[in-house]
Image (cartoon, rainbow, N blue to C red; front, side, top):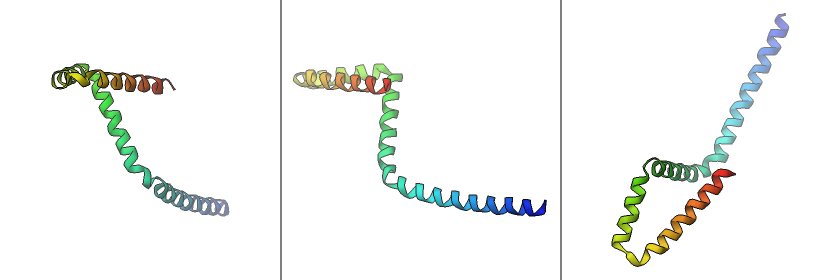
Length: 92
C-alpha cells in the first residue's frame, strides 16, 4: 500500500508542476490581450449603465440637438446603427 501511495504522491507532484507550467504559458499568451479586454469591459459597463439609465441617453441626445442641430441626423443614424449591431451581437 505504501508503494501505491508513493506513486500517487509522485503523480500528484508531476501534475501540480505541469499545471504551474501551463498557467505560466497561459499568462504569457494572454498578456497582449489584457489592454484590449480591459477596454471591452469598460465598453460593456458603459452599455449596461446606459441601459439602466435610459434618461441619460435622452438627455445627451437633447444636449447634442441643442448644440449642433445640423449634425443631429448623422449622430442619430450612427446611434441607431450601433444599437442594431449590439442587438444582433447579443442574439448570437
